Amino acid sequence: MAEHHLLLGGCGFLGRHVAILLAKAGHKVTLADRAQPDFPFPPDVAAQISWRDFEMGTADWAALVADDPVVHLYAWGSLPATANANPGGDLTTNVFPLIELLEALRRRGGGRVVFSSSGGTVYGRLHTVPVPETHSLEPITAYGAGKAAAEVYLGLYRAMYGLDCRIARIANPYGAGQNLTRLQGAATTFCAKALHGEPISIWGDGEVVRDYLYIGDVAEALVALAAARRSDAHYIFNLGSGVGRSLNEIVREIEAQTGRRLEVTRTEKRAFDVPRSILSIDLLERVVGWRPRVDFSEGIRRTLADLAAGASVACMD
Image (cartoon, rainbow, N blue to C red; front, side, top):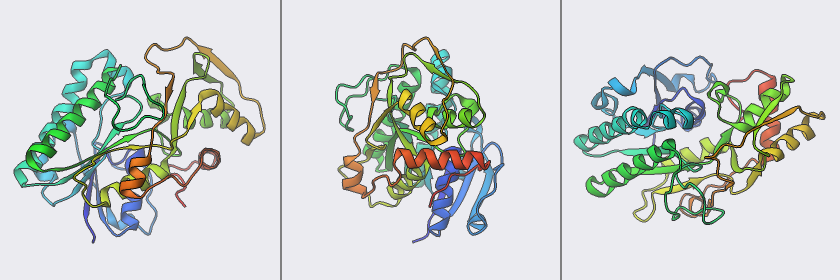
């Protein structure tokens, strides 16, 4: 059945890819963002996707959710560095508007929210690797604390008012279309620097391990999560590859695919970087039926090819 999907912050990296898959499935998609898309959508889906002006702090939430949409990708207006510098502002910018959204859905009488949380920050230092969803939330950054607070409110409105809140704790996505100026996305950033012959900067010894997931797989998982039947037992899911890669391994993979040695500079280790962060994805497979299709080597190959071609949307074949 066709639905109306509202993507808050939908012109961003995740949103554009989710929008394409939703439109291909026959759904209507509204991208709510502060600026219109500056990239083209494929001609076969462009008519299904519209844009409306959106600012977190001044949003008319009642109007936004009037058409019974599925809400994805709640826009998060900070990064780990900016949140740490101003934790109070992080709450004001991100968590307070989320409560207003949930209140609008409560007053309307219900709704579905698919929230993009962070699998790399809400857990903090892991006691178990790969980490299951039952691990305690022990964030060690203000950014992670804000995401964890958002999850608590989503759970609260689910329990008190029956809102269909679904949480995806997403690993480290990579691929064409990622904003490299935000100082996030090591895999995509390293690919871009390799193509331009620029040095790659790594914090510490490069042995920090993270879970990297190709953006096409991320989008497929979010669409599958939105479409899945409501589960009374589970609503929080890790979304990753289930495999860890170090920064040094990313460099070696890019070197193997480009056939040349990359220049790497090293800076002081960051105190808030946990040594290993790998997500267990067994629950998502069991409940939703999703597993990633693109392994890391193929994902890097696609990313290098897309970036070399100047693509703003990743290959999702």
